[in-house]
Length: 235
Image (cartoon, one colour):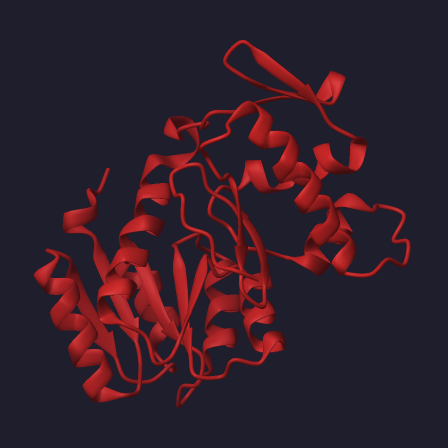
């Protein structure tokens, strides 16, 4: 298994100065780095070289980042962090729904970007079999969640919400995607309904783990489950 400090990072970025800066920071953190200036050859390069993570700009000559992300996902689960100067919610949501693991809006701090790379790699390199299940055990047959010797009961909607987030720690789910997973009958509800369920779920989880925030807001996008981080991006 590749360790984080030997991981190969592919940067697909047409801004030369930015790519050079990010490359320098990644190399200083002991990563190996490859930079491509356009999107035309990116998918084939990924296929041939199998990088451990891709930093993928949204707007690229030759082939745009969303197209690259979609094509890569048809044959690889390599982690993808999308970078973009376009902050419109539809672009970010579309990138995430196509399978991106995270996104960063420009201008960004290279140090923050390196930290996000390390965080995504930690989640990925653990793999499904070695993944830390975190502090919670979900009991689907009883709609209950356990931590240590304590249990709490959830509603069916709360349990479905927690189960969706818990199954993919670190992944950002849009409100629309959460509604699709929770309301299988496709009833028409406000996207803020999810916010209400999250608020109630957080309050119940705080009874089990009063000093730990498990469900994190991601501004303008949705929510993610992360038992390893106490940070929360206000929504």
